[in-house]
Length: 173
Image (cartoon, rainbow, N blue to C red; front, side, top):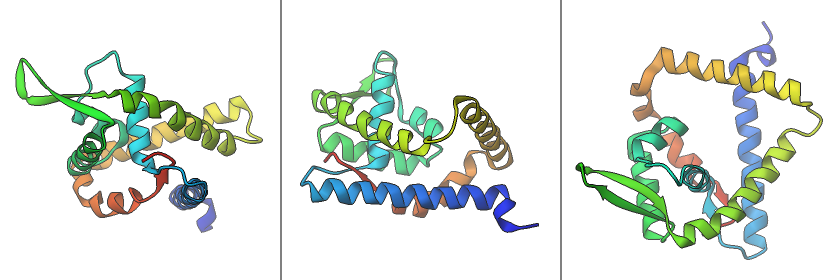
């Protein structure tokens, strides 16, 4: 079997290419003297914006992005420290902290969304809607397969890789 015909090889190659594109975007934004925010932070701000009318907890971010609890905790602390989000204790259980966007977080969302949409546009050039739907459906099934095989226990071993990926940034600081 040729390696370039294996699912794992194709996904890993796409991941590396996407990472390089994100790094180039970060460098372009820095060259324009724009503030920079790590890409994962931007995705989390976008998620909180999309779910702003719901109660969102750190465990929701863990599940949505398939990242470890410690990684989410670090990102949330950084975003809170920089003034993008708030953590508010829930009355029914003071151990739970509901996450929400501050005014700064809301204002940064539009720029983050523009960057995400531009990346999506570049990723989908020349791919018709039907092919993209098939790709997303297959990718979803692969994600389920991996979740079924490894569950959440595997997340703790990903922390090093996640910290490395967290250095890839968006044009927000």
